[in-house]
Image 1 (tube, rainbow, N blue to C red):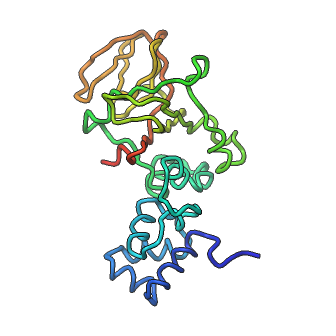
Image 2: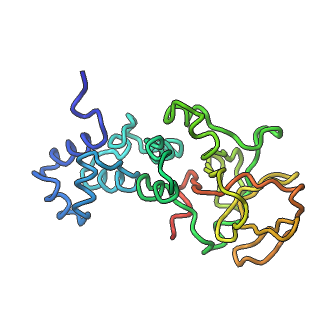
Image 3: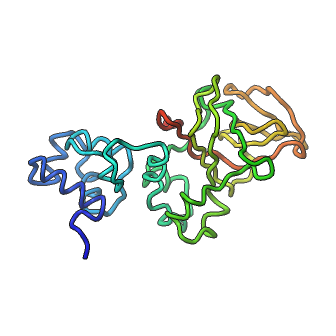
Length: 248
C-alpha cells in the first residue's frame, strides 16, 4: 500500500495545502512562480529540480530534502544534492540531446562557454593511480539499475582533498560525458589527465599536440596527445558550498 506522500509531487501538493493555499495557481501567484511550471511539478509531469525544491521549501516552511525524497530534515549534503539532481537520470538516456535534457529537466549545471577563470584550473586527485576515473557505482546503480546504459556516457570523479587555490574542495564531484570527441573542443571544459594528476580546463588540438588553455584561451601548456589523456567533457561540477557552472 502506498502513502499519499510517496512521490515528490505528492509531497509538494501536501505542503502547499498545509500552507493554506487552495490551488496550485493561487500558490504560484502568491510567490511569483511561473504557473505552468509549478503545475507540472505538482502534477508529476516534470521532475522537481533542486533549486525549485529549495524555493518551495522556503515558501512552505518544509525541508527541500523532504520534498525531493530524502528523510533528513537537516538540509541536503553534497552527495544528496547530486542524487536529487540525478534522481531520474534513466529517463533521459534515450534522448538524443542529452545536454539540453539534463539542463532543462534536472537542473544540473551545464558548463557554459568559458566566461570566467573561476571555472578553469581545477585539479582532481585520483584515488587509484591505475583507475584515475572513479565510477561512483553506489550512487549511479541506485539510480540506473543497468549500469551498461550509463557506463560510456556519464561518469563521476570525486575530489578527495582540499585545494587551497581552487574553489573545488574535498567532497566535490565532477560529472563528465565520455561520448564527446575532443575535437572540436574550444567552447568546453574538459577533464584531462597528466602524469602529475588531473585538471579541469579548456583545451584545443594542434597537429599531434593538445594545448592547455586559460580562461582567455591563451595557451599555457603544450603536451603531445600521447602524454595527455582527455577523459571527457565536463557537464557538472559541485562542491560542499554548492554548484559551479550555472551561468549560461
